Image (cartoon, rainbow, N blue to C red; front, side, top):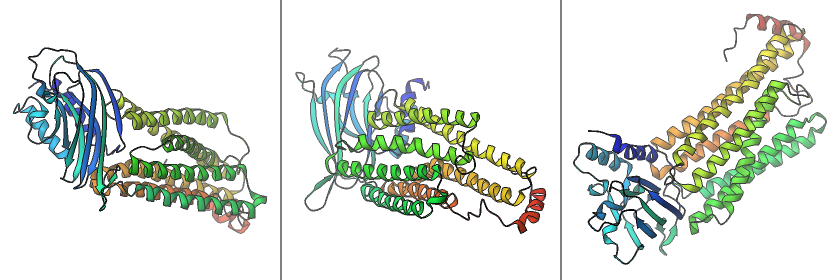
Length: 438
């Protein structure tokens, strides 16, 4: 069987594996679209799930009355069910996803009144699971245009209040608020440390304070955003503040890693040309990454360019993560060379050890937050999706604590002042140590 007509269906499987529950009330504009499958949203329902679906300005490019418009409509489908639907299509048991008994029909166009080009329906979902809302158009060479409004929520409590956050993410407002309090506390502690050690404070330490404050503000705005979405289905402007602080936090964090990696401020008061070039690469890429993230969040998977923006975001993020490692590598090589020539083996050995540890920690942080967290999202039940957020935030918190502790201002910083009695032993250690593999 020729699978080319089924490629959009196969693409949907990839979209469904992305553990993103958009949750809030979503409005989608579909214009002259001939895709046979259009994923609209994803949501984790409890046993009291509801879907409100409204479509207006519905029009088909072919108005032939003989068209079987029962092959055009909306349905809900779980990930496991969709795999079997794909098998049914490939084995030609069915010719349209809407014909499968594994999907749950929400509305098909044959129910439309001839005089109306709109409809409104409420679908009750009592089977707890994670579902995707999908539009199917199984009519060849027929383009569809319409405005779609979807609202998915769960009823909770005796009063039946609406919870617009997907099951498994409903605790996120509390999680983000808790971590924001932790970061505000860290910022206050860091201010105390800077005041107490003000004679040995460098510019990099104030930059570190800025990164922590932006992280705290970012988490606070995200907590408020999710809280409003949970109650009303809309962020009420908090999403804008979240994007702003997320943008600033992303740029400053990567810049901080680069600056620490170069030893700027506490080892040397300047940046070399190649180090400046790294910053000139990382900062614009972070701008692109944050713009891509906004497009991904705001458009949803129904957009034809959604997958492209998702790929751009992943590519740019990987490039940034790789780029920030180069300054650390250069500093390690410079310290190794300096240890052989300047006669300060003990000092350079401790500095070298510090940067090696930082290099390893940065790699572990990047690997955990990009790979391990994604794997956790993939294998975790939709009911416990909050665990991946907690894991990511804990890893980030540990990275912030390590960076702050190791590069704190200190009069007798053991990394920069070493007893001369250790000089001979350190020189011997530098001679005997194996080459550090980067």
